[in-house]
Length: 71
Image (cartoon, rainbow, N blue to C red; front, side):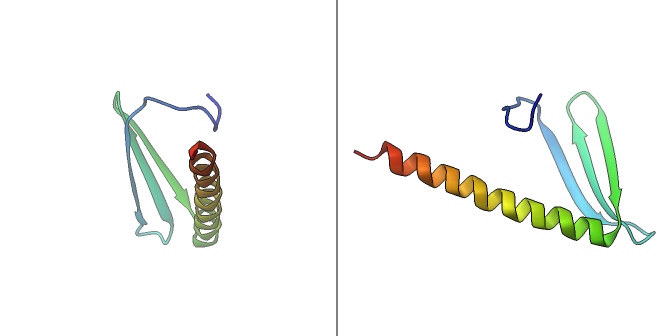
């Protein structure tokens, strides 16, 4: 599956600090899949910046589609 493909997988995500000074992104998906991902604070800030940039790009795509559908 590529990043640009839709998925029917349901998952929960939790984000928070660990007791070792890391930032954990914890993903729990259907089928008992649990994925803890630990990042140092600088890496976590880079991820946050990527999320913001991706959200902005997604809004631009959505806005372009909604403008194109108007008659």
